[in-house]
Length: 425
Ligand SMILES: [Zn+2]
Ligand SMILES: [Zn+2]
Ligand SMILES: [Zn+2]
Ligand SMILES: [Zn+2]
Ligand SMILES: [Zn+2]
Figure 1 (spheres, rainbow, N blue to C red):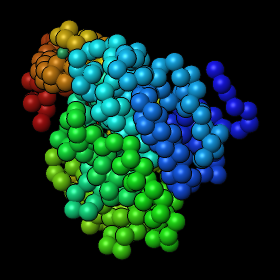
Figure 2: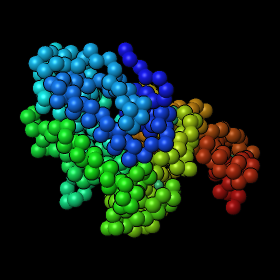
Figure 3: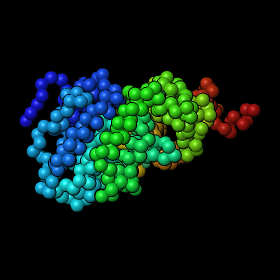
Figure 4: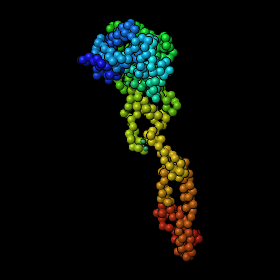
């Protein structure tokens, strides 16, 4: 293996490693450097193609970058001489139709090579970004087969689906690419795209042309705002209204803010109420927190959830959150009916007569309170003490209710029977 001395590194460890790789290997580079590099790489590939050599399966780890115009292809064992099979071992660059057929030993066609060139160009222009959205189970293979491309173009705009939230940086990087290039990527990677079907893919010369055009634009003052590798916000095209986020202080177009939230199924226009929270900030941690009464852990709300609680409190009579998500899921056996009940629904029932405390479910709590009221009534009406009358000597009864009443009033218990009391007055 040939490895040049000096600075630089593998494509995989530098540019394909995104912001981290760039800051490590090429911290000074901007989009112009990236365009020059991309043209250098694609030119080299074009020259190979002219000689009838195909990459076979692109392995970005074998592309070594010493400078924007100083690129080496090392470890060329996997190259494919036209018509001879290559071992496919890099899923990321494998065209969807080959994954669908589940083949491993393959003869790549020029068209399949072109697909890989497009992936290469995409991951260079969107430094390190894989073209597809891997979805919830993060399956690369499925995303390629489905061609789940999250970016789009239309009406002169570069759009991106919500799938790219929350970080949103790729929406911004995408927005700064030239329209022609976005159109090329979209139509190659989106399942409905013009160049998506085998046999229709753009060849290397097209990508070289688009990259050179981009480079030219960046060199003019028009493209100045797009030169940064990871611009902080969208293009200032003169049509978009830019607003300052009250949390991070960055200016963004108004569509890059949360405009509404749902509180108990009701849509609340928070933009109207003066909230200016950009999308990345919406999912960042806020300064508002609560401590779970069950597990004692402290939880910080995101800025979005903070707004939800603020509006919930003012408009919907929200109470302060008492239990975390985990604890809400945890159940405990009711001390009365024996059913498994969420911990937060448990009530502490105090049986004063028997001096007992039991954790019970909400239903049992109501039932026990009712029962204890009846018990209390019965207890009040039952005899608490027998006393012999001071006047006639007959014994008479005093109920528990009376004893309670007299002692509460601070009176002594009666010493004469009801009959003798009547006679006296
Ligand atoms: Zn912000
Ligand atoms: Zn808990
Ligand atoms: Zn908890
Ligand atoms: Zn119960
Ligand atoms: Zn008496």
